Length: 251
Image (cartoon, rainbow, N blue to C red; front, side, top):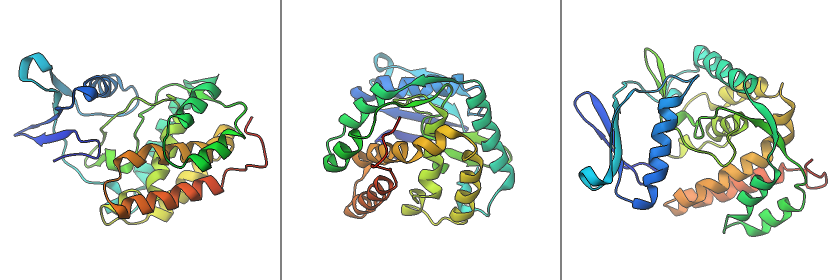
């Protein structure tokens, strides 16, 4: 099985082997593995072995196989919602507020598509202060395994290691319908209402959500492999952009 990023995933007898042949991705995959090992608040499959280029000509790691399913293919799960709420609260409570203006502007400037929209947004960004702390980095429902226990996979380094990025990633599925482009999902609207209700108690979320959602959708563009997915992303990027208040400076 090949993921959106091009990494290969092989299910063995009692484990999973994730690897890449792309040398440019070696450091990123290693960082993903380390983040999975070091996760404090999310239960992740145990990493058994790391395989380096010198040993087998590729880079990858072997981890515990965990049976389960995509949460959005099942009825709304109140227990999972509580787990996600606890996780977000824990990460925020152990984070520190920091000025991320420069790194956010740098990230916006790194994108080659949708420059007309990006330039308009850049004109509004003056100061961005968000909590910095533990962050999964790619917390879509695709990376949640729902079974006897809830496991989290595919951790990812993020340009801003903030709980806000995890909030945005969850709503990538529930608001923007990313998973529904590939599988049959259910109860997305209920999930989104409940998540937004939980997140809305945080001022930084209310202030910066749409900006970070706009950036998040731009980050997905390189993984769009079909005209249908590109069209879908164009629509969602325009939607996120339209909700950024360009008449008010982001400070």
